[in-house]
Image (cartoon, rainbow, N blue to C red; front, side):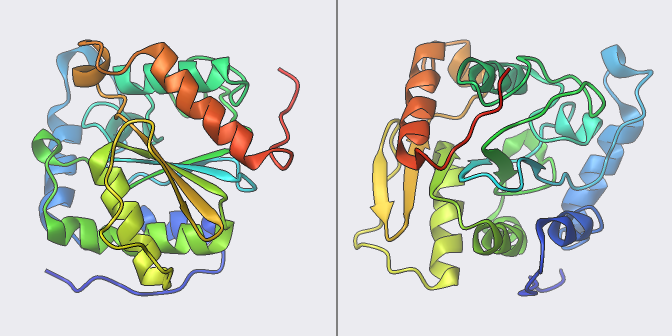
Length: 240
């Protein structure tokens, strides 16, 4: 397996251009291509994206959301983070309620969705089998997240789930940020201030959490409201 890159990027556009060409994890690339060829019956007429998925959102955002990885028949199909699956439906509906998205639904890259003050990325840019990632796979992808943080300088990073939380802390460590010991633990609603960045913990918007009530709309709304309060008055919302 190729060694993880430590390349520094000049812009978010440069990062996203490299992401879609990434071949650092051959096993993930093979899996994504396999899914894109076999498809799900309900999406048989789709031309699957099947490549690593770039980040999405407002390039001037002060709030960054870090998820786990693209879903096999969600972002791996549509080519946009949290687009085309139930997890995305839940997340974008919440962003719409918070005034951070111009519409509550996200079906494909041409659906007109726009985000204001929010940038969505992930710990891994390829869909993994059974949503399970190895430490090596996460390490391979971390440089993209590290560079996104360096370029954007977000004030708040909202981490969806423990994987997103740990990946973010690892990226901050790579940047050279002083982290408390012991390492901050993930919990829903946790707030951890680290220098100029505040980490927010939120249960992942997966169906496993939303269908069982572990994560409710009100719980998501509360975390998003905390994020908005932390970046005021710098977070400027467009009239919707």
